[in-house]
Amino acid sequence: MSQFLSYKLTHCPEAATRSLIAGIYVVTATSFAVLVFSWLLAKAYSQNAFRD
Image (cartoon, rainbow, N blue to C red; front, side):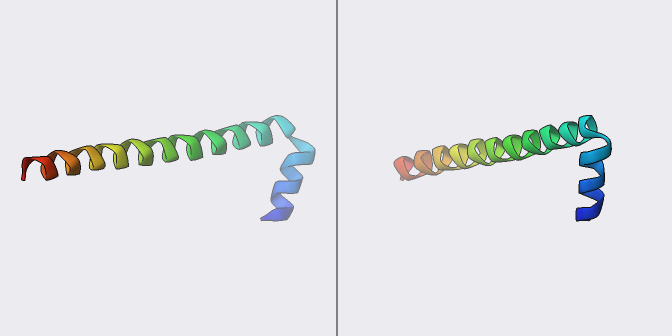
């Protein structure tokens, strides 16, 4: 795997840059989705707590 990555880095840097940017984008989108989901969960939980 590391040999494949180093080959990509040396022989096609634009593809490596694209995959790096895609990886950063996926990580950011995933963490943002988790943040929004936990915020909605906390909001629903607080509404239920106030209703009781």
